[in-house]
Amino acid sequence: MAALSTPLDVQEPSSTTEAVVDLSIADVRQLNGALHAPDVAEKAPSWRVTNPDGRHGIAVGLDAEVTVEIDGHVGYYCAGMNKSATVTVHGNAGVGVAENMMSGTVRVRGNASQSAGATAHGGLLVVEGSAAARCGISMKGVDIVVGGDVGHMSAFMGQAGRLVVCGDAGDALGDSLYEARIYVQGSVKSLGADCVEKEMRGEHLAELAELLAAAGMACDPAGFRRYGSARQLYNFHVDNASAY
Amino acid sequence: MCGIVGLHLREPSLYPRLGELLTGMLCQVTERGPDSAGVAVYGDPRWSPPGHASVSLLPGTATPDQVATALRERVPDVAVVDAGQTLVVHAPVDVDTLVDAVRTALPELLVIGSGEEVAVLKGVGHPQLLAAEFGLAQAQGWQGVAHTRMATESAVTPAHCHPFSVGTDQCLVHNGSFANHATIRRELAAGGAVFDSDNDSEVGARFVAAQLAAGYDLEKSLKLLCERFDGFYTLLVSTKDSFAIVRDAIACKPAVVAETPEWVAMASEYRALAGLPGVERARIFEPEPEEVYAWQR
Image (cartoon, rainbow over all chains, first blue to last red; front, side, top):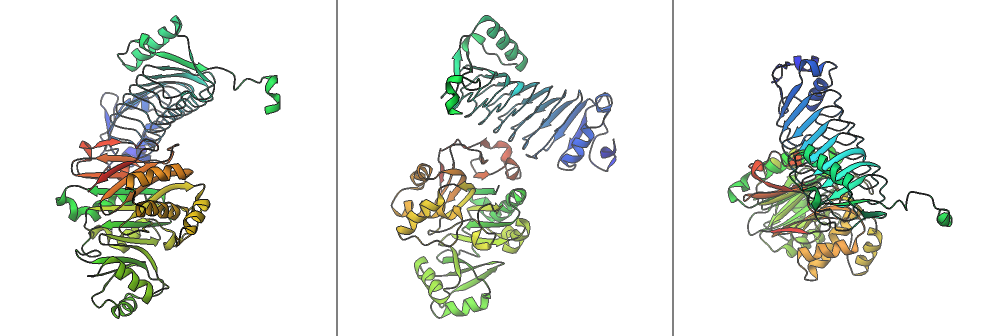
């Protein structure tokens, strides 16, 4: 790994020990370069990042079965485009954590800023605290479980995937929703255009129980309500032709 | 995109470190606004000695000596502090007297701030170089705000830089863009307001100043701003005893607040707060849309 041969305070990685990268010494580009090495999963499957201090773009574009533990708060787009990796932020995350994730798991132990999980296609994003506005905006297949509240316009234009909110949801939840499913345990300040409450059937309780278990949230699925698209907005109706 | 940072100190033993801490914060938001920057510092003994009024100026081509000579005829004890593209003058007189003296003796110079507590420093260039030019790291005081600008709607000149300080000891910095500023500008102008620039953020500052002058407190003034202004904004507004934050209803312009018993700090991004002493113990949160957060000295 060329990036790690530079004279940095980086513990030499191996398959049995954890590689440690101190971002007060190494820069994010060096960290990400090392994490992008084609053989990273075999040579160094376990990573720890210290002193992130809110830097942007930490652990983006991973494409290997590695675990990355980040000790502190991160800036924008942490674990963006993640594929296969398991990234844990032991702190808060800035804008767009796990945006465009394809697979793998991203866990934020604190709170997440706006647009968490934006446009993500797959994988699991867990925010143990609260997520701000636009959580899961344009989600395309990701599962998102939030331990606290979500801000306004969450799941805006969500196309596929599941959003689980153990706390409350802000204004305009699920606005212009396509086929994503939303479960909320607390109150919903308001529903967005074409988002409606739907019946909670057995299959929904079962998938919610699975999601809560995967996220490690000790909530009773029976306490949640389900929301989804009324399918009036995105399907063409000839009666509305004059409006187009 | 612009960068905002602000620090309101509660613990007097930190006052000597205000400039050092604010410089560190400013440098972290350089990438959000690399074309120009400005700062406002409350309580620095070089710029705002106790018992003195202070006026901040953009001198144009006038030298500090020329400014001092022109002012001494009217205010004999005036001192002129050179801070790069900005000059700060102070004297043991009241604020109105010093502002009147500057405007009469040097009508071609732009007053960018005045008060008993605040000094406002602005300039075009890289924010880190400007911090050095201002001597910001050596500043002391109890409150400071800084702004890095990436201009989107008006020219890049020192006069267009934030903070906009248009009332005594008041200061406003803005990340975003107002949509209906031209309408509100006309209304304020009809009421007698005189504008220094065509910057949309100055309209916000003049609006807040008008509400404060009408007797509203800062919190109410900012609620009125939310009702009247359309557009995107995260605002940090300070006065001689307050430090307040408000975001628009969409809240797409970022803001992070950290609070400890020793200080309250706000920044566009967390990384600007990461170097503050005791940040690991801070309560950290993002301001909710259209909610006014205010702290009193």
